[in-house]
Length: 160
Image (tube, rainbow, N blue to C red; front, side, top):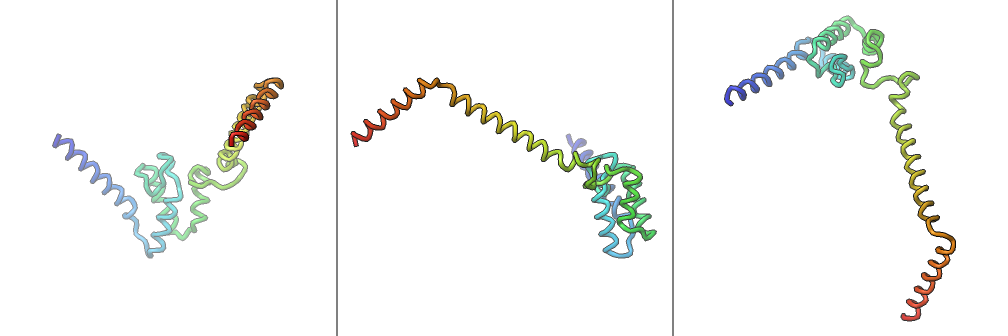
């Protein structure tokens, strides 16, 4: 039991140390430049992990892409230039927020369309059930029910 606890502790410490060195190993000339690097690596998706940013991933590809981004920043490339390079090389998938264009319409509008379709079918089902309830009694039964309700309300009124 003690060995397992020690092993888990070592894994956690080494993982945290590896992650800390992954971003802190880069040297920046200003805090703004470091902030821009961190922001950019948070906005780009790791292509291996898919739901992690480049900043949060420890995959080898993510480390390579961070080094590439760092090199481009040090070469004076703008954020837009770097993003354009990454998109041209890896496609819109590398972006956590893909641009609005015909190929990404399903991503942006799909949930709203599905919600509207579900709402339509729910409304239609509820209306059919309401109509079925209303038409369940024949005309004679409905008239008899009205008479009974009228008689009941009249007897209640005379008692008061």
